[in-house]
Length: 390
Image 1 (cartoon, one colour):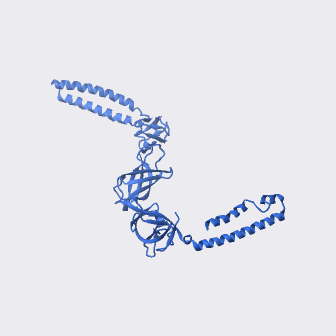
Image 2 (image 1 turned 45 degrees about the vertical axis):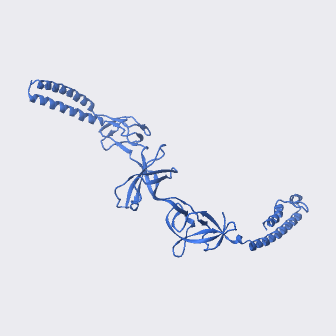
Image 3 (image 1 turned 135 degrees about the vertical axis):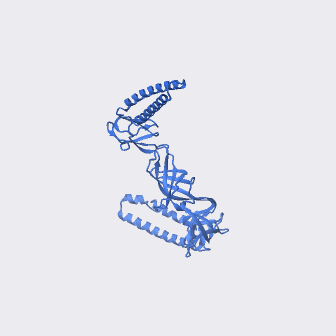
């Protein structure tokens, strides 16, 4: 039957190519530009096409009557096997870093020497700016001179006291005076150190918030914003009902959509309190940032691995149906012996577990090795014969 249909289709191909064995070709007729002849040829070819269409229709009817498999519903199948199944819960988070601070002035005076600019990489302890000390350095030099004299006096009185020369009061007064001068020098040195602004950690000067020559005040004047992009993490709020399944070390996948990047990691910190406003607890996940593309306050999606099953039976979500009782139903296939790609659909009620990423875990009702109908099962009946498409 199929060979006959192919043979009958050959004249149509020949006609479409413009050839004619009995007379002139279509190209020759068109070149003559004889309108009557062109119309006559078109009418002739149309009649031939109509005759061939009628013959093909009759052949199709015969094929439908004789080939039963042609009328069977087509299905696609999949062999059932066990696999590792992981379920993830998604929460939204923000990228952050603990090393993102604004450096304030600790001394009151004129910003005398600004040594860095925006975008500059600095090291921990590096001098960023100096503030006019208002004469503190001169005062410190005087105190150091007085402290040196007090030390000499104390050491002399100590030697005399050890030789039982002089009074105890003279010795104690020299000692007290020396210690007092030492404390004064240390106190003034501490104040003078505040006139030098240093980087508390290595990073990048993201903003310079003041200008050289401005008067700055302690705790009020913002000088720089210093950011380090090395120790980045994502922080997110997780609903409290995940307390039993999520903890420190839980596997996660972090997605930063603005960079089209994903990272695998684990939770490094879990908060110890529940936010009463949204009934959630905080988690932190470290993310690598070798090329510095990740920035603070970027939005990230965290997928939390809250359930894992080994040797699980997983099927496509679209293969799962519901009956009138609300039960979950699938169709398996039992192939017929002696007939290739023909089988019988068998209806089964199953129990389901978690679903994720268009996959469903089957906890009861299916066994490994069975053949599952994954496409075309929607209108099937139990025991119906079907044809395998794949």
